[in-house]
Length: 479
View 1: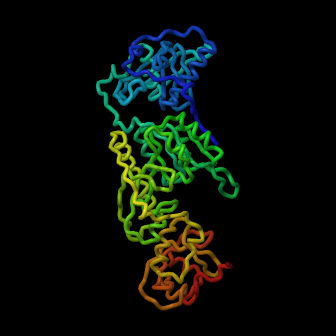
View 2: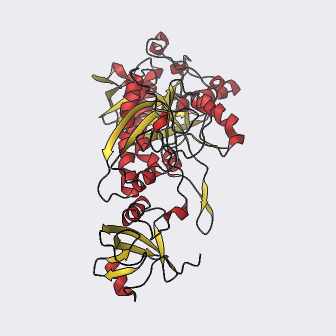
View 3: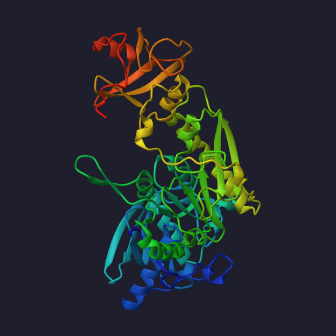
């Protein structure tokens, strides 16, 4: 299993002391011995900071009255021993929080530029010049060494909503996961780790490509777990225990999640599913809803169990499926709705008001993974079904037929009531439509794409190719 980032067991971390503890009001003493004991202290301090998703930590915040700071403000871990501000100038207001004052943040005036002198773990001196956010981080931590807290200087202290205090682990892989996960990060929810599928080999060079969720996690310096199979379950479970999540949030993870993993979080595991459960349980609910001609869809956020999409419902949001809506369009709309609904779900959890409504399993329907062969158009089917098939598989995998032995995707079409012509026969051509007879009704094809080509309006296709009335689509595919 690939593991990226620092995930450590409890015995390699400290506990954070909070503002009620009088030790935070005492001044820290200089460090005089630069030995292995100091090195172990520095390592545990860093482990604690990363575990708590902080950007800086002073030793006094774990009850150790020594002039020590560890920080990572985007440039990697830096250790400051016996730090001293030698230059500070300018002034600006900005918001900051503190691991020792959990649940609050305040507006504090800090210098715009500082120069700081300190020693490294070997005792060698160094100097740094910092501006903006990095300077604010170090000024905040230096204040701790003098027995101060940011709330002493802040005239405006605000409390965070309780849901932003929950420790969250996110599990997902494709684009569908991104709106919800990105929204949590953008709104400063406490995401402590991410689980995603292993990198896949793609393209002619078969290079390993990270999932969209992994790329998002790395951009935010989050720990990442990538279990490859059942042989990784024990290690996966151990790392999850070390992350200490309150809630696991899953969206299109795409792999089996063992019961033991689902039971790790203190509160529970949620899944964001793009259908109104219990209908359309499975890997491809959006496509199956469009194929079935549903007029309504939605998002279900439910408590996960070891069975497929069968857990109790926390909340559901319903939407109308718009006329002519494609898989890609509905996918994006439901992904955004899932992000919005997740905020409400976490709010209810934090308030202790989250419901768990048992699903009616007798009403359950399945939406299994779509096989590529399901996208091949059978012209003996009704025009209505083929039109839904085209929308359900746009943009991927793309409903297709064959024309003169060439694979042709049909990306947009409309149904007509006329019934003449044999199934698959081109019965008329115009500037904006190639009309094809179906088993029932006709289909006015509007946009096509030949293999290796780009999508084009059917008028451009007709003008560029010697196609004529009476030809048959679906023939000559060599199958």
